[in-house]
Image (cartoon, rainbow, N blue to C red):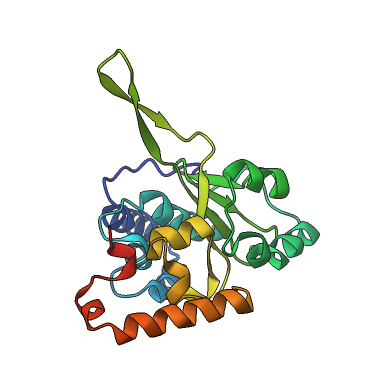
Length: 239
């Protein structure tokens, strides 16, 4: 059993390949080819570009996503007994956790400290950003993806800027057990702004009030009637 995978990569795609090779070697040495094939079947749901693909589609190909990829592989390594985690969530607490995910996170801003206050310490943290919660029955993990931002502030009299890192970052997405990536995904308000820009609600009005949905429909109608809009980039890419 390993406690942490001592692997390093500069990007999610490279880390995905390293972890795939690691698990393949472990299963080969232990004569567990069938288990290796079962992992390949599960992770095949992420698509032809590997585990990193859906994350790149969500937040852009230029992102790192090493921690997100590590979290996905951590679940599989743990399932096969190759990775130890610090905590397993008992059945009753697990059902409560799953039942309230969308209501707690969908379209809302939530910080990491709030997550740990409600759900307790994670089973394991992938990198420094992804909180992983593992149930005692090994039925599938919940991943809470946080995204710390750096802000720059000019220092009067110093003639320079100073960077400041958010030590209690916002959650941008939550991933729950599901048949496929998309159906298990919940985006927070912050995550929706990162994904589609500040005007995300115009094209994605689900969950809004009736008045807000009516406004969104009106704005879509205005945009569709304006020929100049056809030359504009997607809303999430506008300045």
